Image 1 (tube, rainbow, N blue to C red):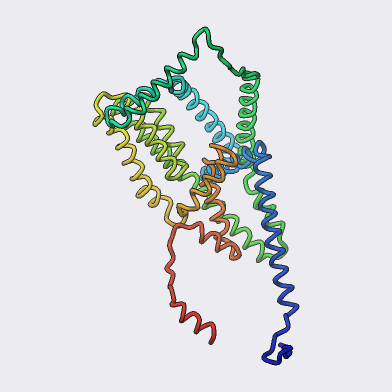
Image 2: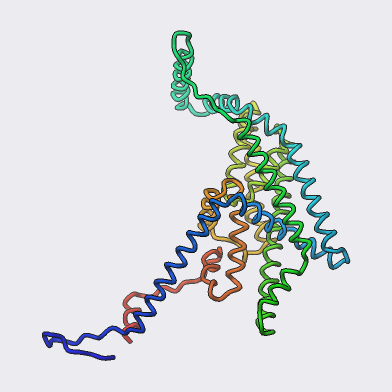
Length: 389
């Protein structure tokens, strides 16, 4: 290291190392390029969501059904036949569930105003301070009624193109659903084609073996997780639906299906299900104490599933920390709405498993993990002494 005396002669200053500055500039440029690339990916996912959303859903569905295809392959069933049967069964199941649940769901949507009024009246029996809010609401309703007198002009905005907009949305949803099932069919029927393409991308035999091992491990863990979570959620929805049917809740099949679907959203989905069941129970039963049995049963089922069943079946290694879960749900719901929120945690697990298999991304997988590693805190004075030594 070259040292030159200062102008005052009181000390020396070290000349900068050109190589260190070059490395710092390279790291800075790399960070900027990574940040720009991430922003471009986010913009692409947002503006091209009509393309990316069904494609990613198809990959997730294919990964979910892959263990079944692999099991049938071991017993002599061709991949094309098993994939076709599984996709057809999925279509029939979803169509049947949608048909059976459409009637009760439409009735609930049409009765939203009466449900809100009944809930307000029921809560007034529990909490007196709400009476003031009810009086204000009644006064506002009176003002609205007076504004409808013949002598008062009423301004309204006509909504044009409602039917065409609804038809466009239905057509878009139908196209996306078709893409999901057709693409998942091709992915499942392709068998080991993707693995062969990956092997052909590497030159040496050791690199091919390592790449194949990583791809198989990632695919196995993700597919096992997605299928297991889907089965657990289906079981949870069945138990909740049967329990609410036993308690006399109206439309128990709707709340069972809602519990199964919303349980793909950890914490948030269970809370939404609990609130919905509480509202319907309060307006459906005369006794408040009996009405509270329904949400208590739902809460018990969620606790058993979240604290015992899922950790025991899935394992602690694939658990995600709560902060990452909430950030992922908020991000994907902003990006793709409710469908994005449902895919948030499965995509987060995919990212974690992928990062765990690469040394350069292990810190990302460690951040997403739920395990708490022991951190030894040292005294700042001791750290300073070590740095000086």
